[in-house]
Image 1 (cartoon, helix red, strand yellow):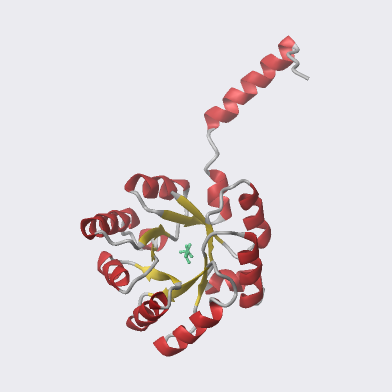
Image 2 (image 1 turned 180 degrees about the vertical axis):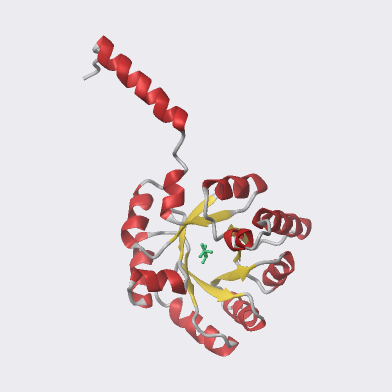
Length: 217
Ligand code: E4P
């Protein structure tokens, strides 16, 4: 499973990237706003840091302007994936940009039918939003499983990018189902390491090391 980091915070991306945990980055207008940075400037900095796909989202809602924005975004770096919303205009932009040979991430996916349309429009990535479905008492994991099943039935190459991940269980379930990629905030990725038995076991070992004065160096 590929790990994308869902943030526009350079320091957080760099920390995980140094550990080999970053296969790509996703941003969205809310994350750009949170960073307080200029979209072009911060996206370029992320692309310089990370080798894998970096999703940068268009701001327009009509296809012609989305395509123009997408063409400007891909000038930033070769690893840009243009992010477009799952609307008819977004799908038109997806088709045009993917026909041009660019990576496209179709975002704000909340149904398997939407994911089917995005795959047919040539999306490189489809982003089903797990957490936002859970927020309205629907099961985001059912959506990931449905899309996996449908894409496998017909051999679609669009990669399932599990998004709106809010917990380590979302990561685990997405991996079990076979999402190709997951994107999560740095804090979620970092908390995947936590286990009370690891802490307890290490504590016991440290006590024995001290009691027996075990030394290696
Ligand atoms: C990623 O591409 C999405 O923009 C992001 O995961 C949304 O997450 P949220 O629902 O927690 O804002």
